[in-house]
Length: 186
Length: 150
Image (cartoon, rainbow over all chains, first blue to last red; front, side):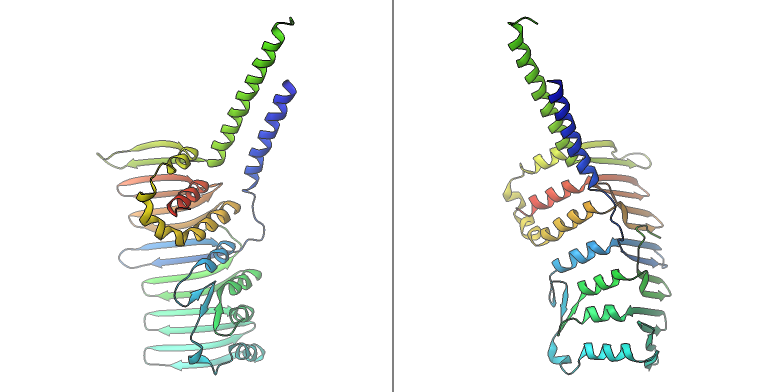
């Protein structure tokens, strides 16, 4: 009888231990961080910290006009003549340098290639925007004709080390989006 | 031990074992469902406060079954679309290590949402009150499922 009770207790303990094991840490997890600092009258800082795994799981489930299965679908008639993968490939093989430069009265735009990255810099009167994206991520983005594959791009982002994706520095607002291996909010 | 008392002892022992098994099974069920913790403290005079109220998630899960479908008809339409995404989010969150999901800091309000163990912990602090809420992810999953009418 005592043996039966002990076996019962052991079995129950094992099931509770199994539940606790579910919270075990996931190794090599990459995190998407978003920080928005509003320096206006209602000073506010918003920090969002999301595991890439969670983002990649949820994005395919979002459905709206022009966005389905984690892919942005565009009207091909407007860009039928442009072979985006070939264009990206040519850019990757090209030498580092500034490729597009637009100087407007209120805005300056620069598109540069530096090592394995595409850099886009927009300078407005009250705001500066820096976007940097690796070519393997761009490749993943343009895997199929007429669509941008965000899930593949996210997976490609997660394969490499820490990187900053977007930085917006405005007079009243600072936005930063980056990826690293830290699960903590800075 | 006399021969006449032996059947009685076996019956008594079986009952004790049965009670123990039911107790352990109940404990495991309650443990798996988690506990909802609510703590609301108002600053200054007046207002109602809730100090460290703890509700087993198991009870909430059971209570959800008593909500009539007609009361949730509108919610069914809205939630049915979101439910697969929410379910997947809760399932993935459960597997992940503890982390801070959101932090909002302003001059008059602080909000923190943290994934801790199998729970989602929400802390809100403003000029008027401090709210601390712990909700098991399993309970959130059950609520979403019930509201989606599945």
